[in-house]
Length: 342
Image (cartoon, rainbow, N blue to C red):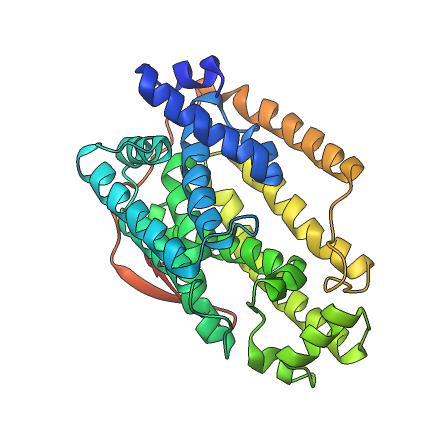
């Protein structure tokens, strides 16, 4: 974490500064797209985003780190310890783990609903035992905690020009769209972990099942039915991106370039997958460095333009009070989110 970012955010205590710096390191190392987009935010908001990402990254590594020799019971115990630290940190700010210290501070500063963190950990814990999903609806229950709540956590940090409740559904949809993209890009790696996030009913409609995907992964052989199934999953993902798109205009103008850049880069992964004819079982699709640079430069120009008149605009109103539970259906994925779209 740069001193400039921490100073701008009003983070002065040395231990807390070190905690936020740890989160920034995790984002820079593991979340290249997110880290790039975060650089487009005003400096005072970057530490909070790094804290949210650092927590998510840490929990995800407990579950998914292939380099670890930890057994499933050991991973479950590590999650339990993480939950205990989280509870203590959110309750009274006492946590020995730096990532939790930064997260608790961010949650307090921005009034983030603590239930979002509990829901996230519940989905992470399910990854230790659940290896597949029968339907899009079943997958949606998982993604509420693993993806939708990420968008909801971010809203108070980014700021909105509409009621918080109105922006909640698009924010949840964007978190889901990003994760659906990851599921498609990483389907081969997930199979290696013993998991499949492509719903059984969706791929069955194209004559594909888990065994056929595993056969293709193992042998390197192509099957047009698999290509059709992956194409259908990509089409569904693009639908969710379209549902998230209106949310960009609901954000504080100075935050829009960051989220727009992430939107363009992540949806660009789908373009890369399509260009490579859905060979994701055999190689990982990536957005080229040249394309990333072009998008980043465009985002920087937008960010500078948005910040220039910021001092002359009235302060953005951000809704901090949690709204009642509602249930938003996102094209076949029944996803509970906090807040009803106005």
